[in-house]
Each structure stands twice: as structure tokens, then as C-alpha cells.
Picture (cartoon, rainbow, N blue to C red):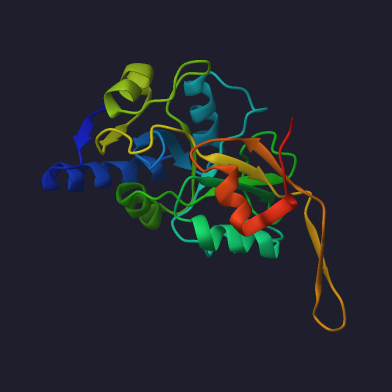
Length: 230
């Protein structure tokens, strides 16, 4: 039976984390707080869990969920290729409200939907989310809302959307930002090094969604590689 666990109460936090960990291990769904909005998530390597997540949201396979990770190093294990600019963006803005789309490691045994060989990665800046991710590993996590409805900024709002289709609700209080992450697509960026070690970068970084992190801040790291659609 689903329950909301108040993570400001130590006993609830411990019980909620334990139940959430078991649920993720069983390919079930949990709702967790992040630094942007609440997320609904499952084991990223469970096709059954991802199917349940997409069904709960009313989404098809053409809308694959992003993957939340507990450490920046995990990006290198999940992505086939991490451009230097992607590493710099992660070093600067993770944990935080930035999602990076990269080419997925082809050897990974997962099915997130119709990803076209890519994966969207983010390390959230929220102690409860990070604690769970460090316990269970990468999670497929989408905003906690039904398709077409506003994203949940409270756990109660998420519970209103999903009810018993979620096994555990981790209540971390109102979302600090209340705005989704900014999403950058780096799959068009490639790098070549000459014999002297100098790097030539080709391609552009495409802004897929403008969210809590501004273009101005991102440009302090990526400069004019960031392409904004008119």
C-alpha cells in the first residue's frame, strides 16, 4: 500500500528510504523530491519499471524518461562519449538543474523507450534524491505529473496524480525551485585533437528546454557553442 513518508521526521525518512529502495529493486515506482520539481522514478535498468512509469504518466515510448545519477562519474559509464564541454558543464552545474543529452553506451542492458541511442542525464541537487540514487544506482525519473498537467511541486500534488500506482512517496517539502531543469543536447558536438594536443570542436549544443538554469550562466562555460532556437 502506498504511503507518504515525511522526510523531515527521522523515523519516516528511514522507513521511507527503506521502502523506496525495496520498491525500486522490484521494478516498482516511487515519487521523490528533487531540487527542481518532484519526480516519479524507477530502476533505469528495469524495462518493466520504465513501462510502468510511462503508463502512470500517460506517455508513450516516444517520450523516454531522463536518468538521474548520484555521482558525476556515472556519466562516463552511461554515455558512449563525453565531450570536454559536457564534462565542464557537469563540473560547473552538477549537482543542479541541468540535464545533458549524450550518446548512450551501446553495451548497456536497458530500455528507456525510443531514445534513438541517446540518454538524458542529470545529477540533482537534493540530499534525499542523492541518498536514494547512491543506494539504488541510476533511476529513470520523469516529472511527477500526468501528461499535459503541471509538474508537482509538493508530494501531495504527486499523490493526487498517481495514487496507488506508486509504492512510496518521499516528502521533502515544497520544491526549492519549482521549475524544471534546462535540457541541453550535446549529441551534435564532436571533438578532434591534433598532434600537439590542441582541440577543435565542431557542431553546436542545442537547447531542448529552457528551465531553471539560464542560457547566460551556461554560456559562461560553453560560450557560443550553445545554439538558441529563434
